[in-house]
Image (cartoon, rainbow, N blue to C red):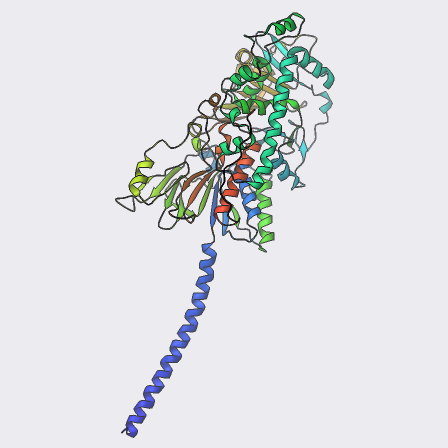
Length: 613
């Protein structure tokens, strides 16, 4: 029987229970609110982070393409790493002290212009584009501020009013035969007649095969929309151009096009007799074009690279007024504006980090790629990394954390698309092998771009006949450049005497004075090459050429949730142009979008391969 005391005690207990329950209820509400906040934060942080290394065509176009795919704003951020990249053009667009010190270690984008003291803008890197380059042209068409002009246009605030004084045309100089081509100050029809007189049948054959190559090349654009490509070799096989990537230009000219001065058929000897030379085209025009564009001769070039270079001689070329590097800024800016618009955001999640990445570590426990600078300072972590700079001179240590013996040990990353398996011993075995193809470890060619001001070409030095004028653009055969000490020369302005010169080594001052006059000034020198750089890959004549996979490293165990490293520059193993970089960016961006579920899954299937040229 319960006493009144007991009843009071019971009531007191009941009161404590209410208090406790109320307290628990409040705690539950607070916990729920905190958990809800944390869940939102976690949800935001759980969104994939993408890092892109390199601010050239590949890096900036990949930024734009990923933004195109991210229509539901599923990405946390895209960060572009490049010490030299300027997101917005400014009047004080110069390298910082840190960047100048870094320039001895890394090379800036090969699409790069310089502004001279008289405000003339000159391309120090990639100078010309072809109007059939659909990806680059589409990017330009999206920005009304970008203006197409003829190559070597004197872009400056006060337009060159003396443009009519420009010599026109181009010339090919050879030490043995002199000016084998000089179309200076003659009409287009006269230029055509001169080329036909000199090269006739051989010119026709190369023109024909180049047109056929272009037709096949243009199929790539539809395929990029409808298919996924795992490697550049898949691309070339799909359109029937793979053979051209594994054959030297010299062998292709000899064996396929039958352009060989040493094995002329009897009827071509007859053409020679009647004044239609045979066997000169490959060692004059084609060799000079390849030396100018890639500093490689016909034996070193792939057949595809040689034919792509020849497209430039067919016309339909342009540049961007103010510098081709404005395309890079435009692509990045387009990505930022599009992200803000489609994600209804005032702050863009697309940003630039003007720092050099020195070490990348795949952390299997966190499923992230961790970035570190030259001092070992942590720079951030990312789910997917896109390398848009050549492996040969990106100067990055790629490492994996963890081993069979110690989870804290770092070891080299197994590259070329290998997937981390369950057997750690097998992983360790794979790491020690030579996994990358030869094309991924070859050196790049060295080119010096020298911008000369106050110069005037010396006709005597260039052995120009008295009845001829010097053309605006000059290219040399191998023997021609040995004699003149120059690979190519282009006149940029008349009144200030600006000329752009390509050479294999630093332009000798004595040669400069002889060729351009004692008053000539070396205003700017850009070195593409050396220990950590280069202009274009050494194609090695296509011998043993196979491209690496776009997926360099996959840290996933059982699914695509692990860190990954993709490689845009795999695309330039056999040919190197701005459009090729854009194609690589498109292919890689699509793979990344598929991995991060920005695009729906696609069933794997064998690619249909076209007949080879």
